[in-house]
Structures are given as C-alpha cells and as structure tokens.
Amino acid sequence: MVTLLHYRLKVTLNDGRSLVGHMLAYDKHMNFVLAECEEFRTVKGKKAKTAPADEPAPTVQQKRTLGLVILRGETIVSVSVEGPPPAAPEAKGIPAGPGAGVPAGRGMPLNAGAPAMAARPMPYARPPPGFPPGMPGLPPGMPPGFAGGLPPGMPPPMGMPPGFRPQGGPPPGFPPGFPGRPQ
Image (cartoon, rainbow, N blue to C red; front, side, top):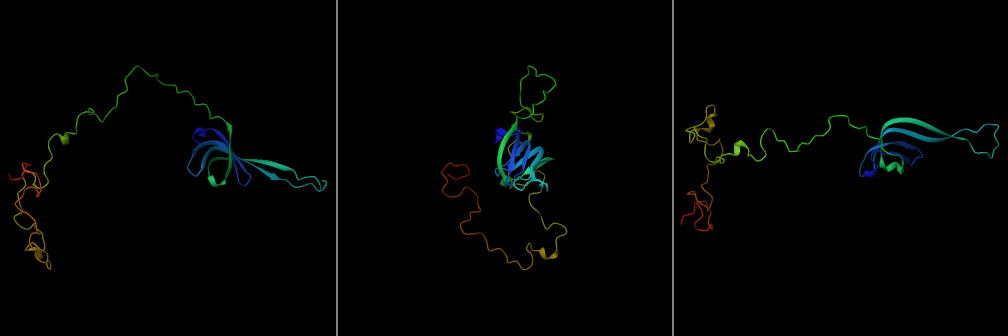
C-alpha cells in the first residue's frame, strides 16, 4: 500500500459507489484518506410510459465532488490505480554548495560534557556548605503538640531494628581491603 501513496485511485465501495481521489494516508484497518475526491454512482432512471415492457430502465451515472474524504476500510471492495501521482514542482532556490554537513548542537561542542558535571556530585546525606549541621530546635510556627518532636498520639520509637550497625562501614560479607571495611 505504501507504493500507492499520492497515486490517483479508484476505490469501489460495498454499496456500489466509486470514489476517485489522491490517496494521502492509510492505516492497518485499510482506512483511506483521499484528497480531491469525487463520487460516482449509478442510478436507475424511470421507464417512460410509452417504452415497451421488456426494455430495461435507463441508468444514469451521477458525479459529485467531495474534496477530502476519510474512508472506512470495512466498506472498501476494490482499489485500482487511475493515474500516477502529480509531478512535484522543482524547488527553485539556492543550489547546494560544496559544504560539509556537520551536526549542530545548542552552541556547545559535541564532545564537551555539561558544565554541571565538571565536578563530582555532592553526597545527599550532608547539608550544603554554609548550612548549620543540625536544627537546634523546632522551626518557627510549629504547633504546640510537637514540643517533644512527635505528634500527639504517636508512640515513641522502639529503637534500632535488629542487625542495624550504627557505627558505619560496609555490610557484612564485603571482601577485606574494600574501602571503608576494617582490616
């Protein structure tokens, strides 16, 4: 189907109508988008009163201009090519010169790192420089129930969980000589 994009197609529908237009798009359900679309349908005319009984009624083909159409793939019976895609007009502009195509960044060379990554990142557990090491008391504006540090009705902490080593260092099982592990 991708080879038929921009071709002028004649699409026959399950109700007998035919649509002719340039195919702009399609999808997995075979829904089509047709541009400059025209609808053709054949309508049976009425028999003249003076016509013999065995003569069939005349048929008339009606044409209607629709424009841009989104066509449901479920209704399509057949697709045929009516004409090639329109010729693309030649672009009249500046001819290409003997330059070298290089990628352009946002004003920075491509191999330079970001300025924020020039130094190692600061650890998260330490307060920033110039900040007091700990809060001496409650911040101003705290409600009176927080005088002891806990909200009213909250039980006091039970202590450290079992196996917790507050003195620091790596967890047990690390090889000796690992930085931070006692020898």
